[in-house]
Each structure stands twice: as C-alpha cells, then as structure tokens.
Length: 415
Image (cartoon, rainbow, N blue to C red; front, top):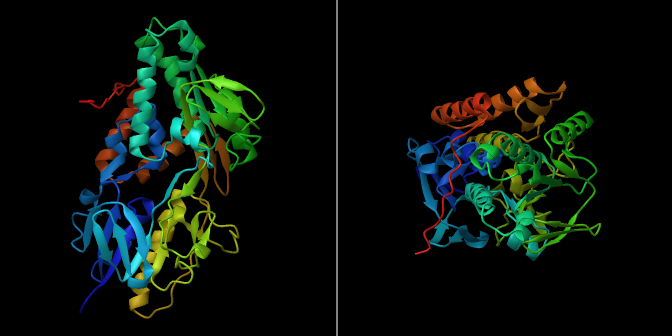
C-alpha cells in the first residue's frame, strides 16, 4: 500500500518532535530546513557570551533521524507553497506532498525599521550567536588601540528588550565584565564598560509575575546593569542609539531582543494570516485548507483559554507537535481527533549565577533554587546525553572557577 508523504518545513522544536512521535510505519517524511542542524534557542545567549560552544546546542538533523528509515532530509530554502498542486517550491526544485506541516518558526522583529535591522544584532540562529561573540570579543581587542574619542562607542553594550533573552544576556555580560575581562585585559579599565538594557514597558520580564519582575530588576541592579524602562528605540545608525525621549546612547554594539515575527511563506491565502502567523483550528489545520498544517511559533490558534493565540514558547511547539503526530495516526484509523489546548507549566529566567526567577502554576520562587531549577529544565531539553554532559561540565567549571576557556574569535578569511 502506498504511504502518504508528509513534508515538514523547519527542524525546530515543533518539527523535531512531530517527526519523532509520528508512526514511521504509516508515513514517508521529508524534512526541509535552511540549515542542517536543530538549534536550541534558549541557550543562544550563552553562546553569544562565550559560556558554551555552539556545537553543544546544535544537533545535526541527519544524526537525529539516522535510524528513521522513512525520513529524508533536504537542506534548502522554501520559496513558496503551491496548494493547488500540493507542492512546495525551493531553491533546489519542487517537492510534492500529500500533507504539509509548516513549522518555520520566527525571526527577529525589527518593526519595519531598516536602519535598526541593518546595524543591530539579532539572536535567532546559532550563526547570530557566533557573530555576537566574535564582534564583542573583537571589541575588547580594539579597545587596546583605538583613539580615546572612539572608546565610549565600544564600552557601551546595549540590549533592547527585557524579556527572558534580554535579561539573560545582560546578566551574562555583567558577570563576564566582573569576573573574566579584567584578567584577560588588565590594561583596560572595565569600570567604564556599561551594560545597558532598554525596555519599552514599565518592567523587565513583563510576561512574568510581579515577584519575578521585581527580583530580576534587583538582580540586574546588583550586577551593575543599567536598566531603562518605558523607553523605545526610534533609530540606530551603527553608532548612535536614539530613544523616543530624545536621549542618545553611543554604542557600536546593539543586540535586538525586542520581539519576534513569524517566518511566513508565500502561497497561503492572506486571509489566513493573523499577526504574521497562520490561523489554524484546534487540530493545527490551517483554515480553509484540508491538508496543510502549522505548528508552534508560526501557528495562531484561538482557544477558550487563549483567545488571542498561544504564547510563542517551546512548550507550545513541542506539545502541538506531539498532538498532531497522534492525530495523523487517528486520521488513518478513522478515530476521533484530539483538540489541542496549552497547559502552562511555568516560565523562568536566569540573571546570572545563583540568580533566577521561576513562575510555576502552584508556586513562585527566586534565587539559588530557582537557578538550579532553570539549569535542570534546560539540561532535560537538550537532545543528546553527550551534549547534556558537555554543557553540565562547562557550567560546573564556570561556577567554581568564575572563568571559561571558550573565548574564541572565529573570523572569515577574506581571501
């Protein structure tokens, strides 16, 4: 009997979990992604701040699925979807499908500001994290030789957006400033290095509890981070950050963590796009289509508990994928399908060693045990035992020595 062919666009949390839970005896699978590895986004900030190597949180897709004989992989970019002929068009040709699952995730949202998009660093890929690490480390090398008039531009690291990523970046850079850089660069006065965190809302971690917001702000203050709330970046030309209150900040290093927007692929009816996400029903079926589904960050699903769509977090993507994989089997067995609803298991963020905040449905806590909880949860989500061990060793070494040996500047040979 001919097996149905499913194409999955995207090897993030949703794509990986969907394939992993799909009955491989019932379907042929083609996974398409622009890169050849799964990227563990929650720890990108640790790559950017030289705490772990990118290979520790990057997992080759062919390695992940080498034992699944029904799964093929193509490294290419999807240019468009052609629903009328059940096909997708890519940079290496077209591929036909019986079912299409879009799990293309999100990209950095620069809110239409081309100057900011051109000059600021995003943090949505492994490459972005490596680029930030290279530029920031090169920054400190340059400080040894630039004119005095240029030093202030290099001594201000500006982070825009005080969600989990922004707060975690600010805390990590501050710890490097105090514990590592003075030993590496004894000729530089790092008292002049400023970590500046900008937030458009009135508090850091706006999606968390009042306890978490206050604790994170206190932790950042203790670490010497300059936190400015209720400010919006109007422009950035590569050297000057202009705020809506008229203030200007000199900086050649602006990291943009102020929001995300869906990786929309052309070809789907624009009426089914809401807030740059594909509108799906409770079974993740894109509305007005019979064989196209969307998962995770790219899916906009209205439910009684979440009438404005689910939060764009890994737990939603993972569990939507698991549910859809089961529903595909039920579909062939003519069994009732299961609707999806998000169960919020909690939110957490770390601001540095022994400093973290955790919001669980039944309890909220901060400090050392919150930090241990954060580490345990993220270690559990890492795909391979080997990588779990490598990351744990790196964390343990950094904890006891207040140092790391991962400060490599990897530069392209221009020739």
